[in-house]
Length: 334
Ligand SMILES: NC(=O)c1ccc[n+]([C@@H]2O[C@H](COP(=O)([O-])OP(=O)(O)OC[C@H]3O[C@@H](n4cnc5c(N)ncnc54)[C@H](OP(=O)(O)O)[C@@H]3O)[C@@H](O)[C@H]2O)c1
Image (cartoon, rainbow, N blue to C red; front, side, top):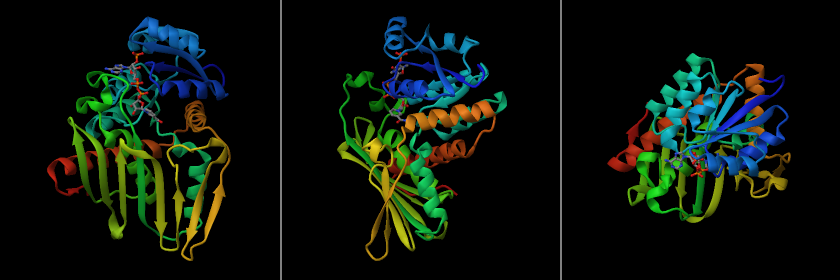
């Protein structure tokens, strides 16, 4: 670490890495130090476009560099476990993209590798770190909506890959493809985040196209009759809905994964009489919020493990939902 900054390296020139590069430049506690690519040429072009001073050919080369403190891993999901474990063995802190892993077994291995190496591990879900999430949490804690009984969420968009199908990991089940892993991750995570309990059972129904779920509907049931329902899809209009319903009212958000307009980030509190209060939240960029949270926690060596626990619970629920959809039966999670 150089004084008060974490020196970050990025593994792969992924599309999402553009946003993280901008966040690393915006965060005073972080520095974009290097990028690694399978192709030096690709890495060099990316580095030039994103103000990145160093390029490595191959991810292992970057992990060997002593001037890197932490790595961001936006690789396809089937590579998350391998490169998180390699990063931990090299003593680097890790921010790995969602979904955490292909399954819980891999996720637990990643956690163990990072814990025994004494390094940080979070997944890359950004909205948890935007001040809006803290504001929602406060509304829940104040008892404004009463005891939570039901969470409903949806994440969808109309998508066709720009790549030939055999090169697109989102269409390859062995590489972590499908809408449940890609989009459902957010809905399941939001449900667990809001309810704060472990689900007892999972039920899932998928529409499979060429081996991957193009759309998925799921139901998680929790103790005391609390339930969470969601749908995610790549063949529907863009939706980012979240409703957290309690006995006295509900929180409603129409863009929970990413504000439609960063300048107007808000949600609503609906009461039982039909009144809706708009809660306007501070303007913030969620990538910068996440990078700032990680960098600060690494610098201060005070790691909030709740997000890693949330990732592992999300993974466990996703695994159960997938089995349920394949075997057409509810899956016990208790
Ligand atoms: N948190 C969020 O908001 C968010 C948003 C979008 C995506 N994501 C997640 O971020 C990850 C990356 O998504 P993306 O859509 O940005 O990925 P992408 O553009 O397809 O890039 C993935 C990168 O991984 C590297 N790579 C290594 N082996 C590969 C292989 N066998 N096939 C394809 N790429 C390979 C490539 O970099 P080099 O060729 O340079 O080595 C490639 O540029 C996924 O886990 C995804 O779920 C998160």
